Image (cartoon, rainbow, N blue to C red; front, side):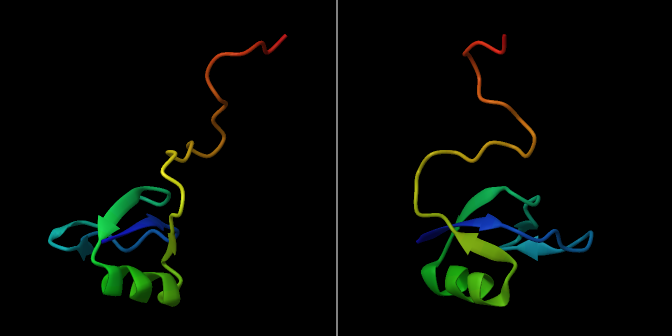
Length: 66
């Protein structure tokens, strides 16, 4: 299995392995060959770390904003 992060939104109704196409930035596990194809096609990127990606524009929790 390979973990990918979707980099391009697909048209409404698109599916990935029988499920609705993930939103841009969402991470999913797919078979390795399929993941490699999606990465090569430019619609996803491989995820090498297991840390979840923060949503765009979000700030890390905690800390001092002062």
